Image (cartoon, rainbow, N blue to C red; front, side):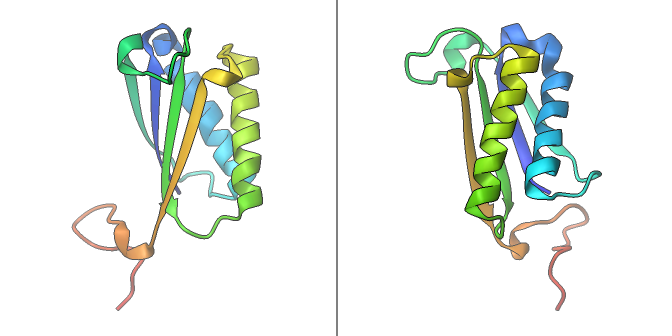
Length: 121
């Protein structure tokens, strides 16, 4: 279960649910996360607030924060899968999709009530 932050330019705002669904499907398909573990933060931004060097057109930036343990092969498969899906189904140029994965440990998560649910003492 990653926490996925999806940042998109304004022109994609009406497709934000479709984008989130595609990202979620790719996470499940390539990194073996449970179907019901969906935690998304979706930000719609003006083009000048989502800069990817000098790239123009609609842009998507994905930030996944997740517990460590996925292999390099799984991450590479995710990159390819999600970019293909967003390009083919949403029309975002593959060069305008940036992905960053940050890993952490079990103690770094609390889903509610101030409890570290992954840690048993």
